[in-house]
Image 1 (cartoon, rainbow, N blue to C red):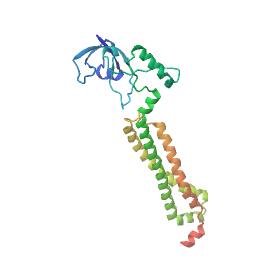
Image 2: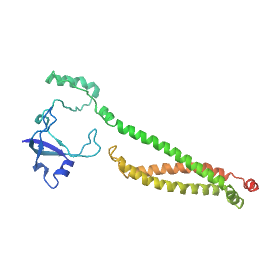
Image 3: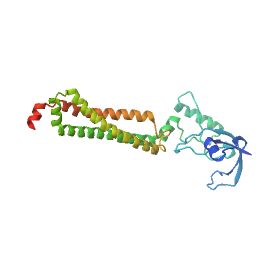
Image 4: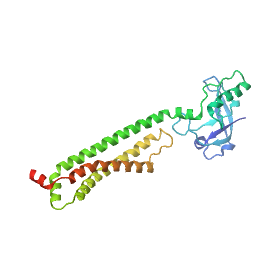
Length: 252
């Protein structure tokens, strides 16, 4: 009887409540060089391995691995672990293969680092694109907060002048403008974090290991946004504190 090993998702989906190592499964035969599946064959499960993401795989899925000799395929891939430079070992590996069968050729030998780079290329481009959009969004948000606060200070110049004429200090005026800006930023940040949660859920199917709710990331981004918002409020606040009460009141 032929043997196979399956992953954890296979056991969870098809063998729930059973002892996998005492279970036989019936699977259609794979015939090398033929796209059509053959008749059903019995397979004895002899091992279980952890879920592993394939190159084009976005989520875990049931898998079954079988020894190569049970269904020899026209082509196959293998990995070699070495303490030396992997690129310098390609000739030695090719010579070892040719010593077994001179007609067998190595096609596209690559290091694991190269495979990883190729596999993650699309995800890396997506993350760079998202990062660029985030930087532009942050700049526009800071610019918008600065514009709103500067307009508010200009509209309230008479009020601020009266406050200062009645004894308000420059530090108090700066604190007032900063406090109002902080409230505005906090409301926007709260709404943004809710939206970020749903975006995170959508991104779970993209790079591996992305969580819908990453507390560390949310806290870090929230601190950066709040600091940027307060910085955008600081310049209008300093301008408000520099108002000369008598000049404004005379103009009014």
